[in-house]
Amino acid sequence: MKIQGYYIADEIRDLFNWSRDMVSKTARAREWGFVWVGRSKLYRASDVDEYASDRQRTDLLRKTDWLKIAGSQLVRDDTYDTTCPVCGGFAVMKPPADGIEAAQSAPWLCENGHAS
Image 1 (tube, rainbow, N blue to C red):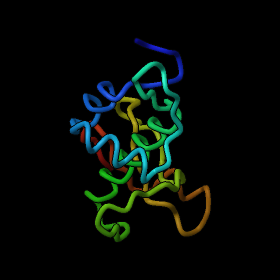
Image 2: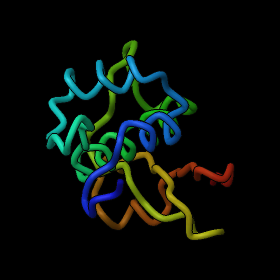
Image 3: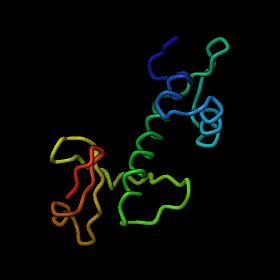
């Protein structure tokens, strides 16, 4: 069963390579919206997608020495987000200390391994 704007637990399990229990625990901890359809719980796609973006950003930033990230903490600040100039994929950049002009030369790291 597929309803636009929602994921079933199996889709989330596949997306993150999680157990059913991990989906349930994360959904409760992150307060994902859901609806019941019959006996199935469907999770709001916007909540899951936001978590996926936060997790991707955090995973890339952990590969750098730009900031300290404790344990399972996620970086939710999207000021790090940018587009890879090599492949157009998702990338993170080190925020410039002195404004937007310096952003053009700021170091960055891409999800596909490209880096400046």
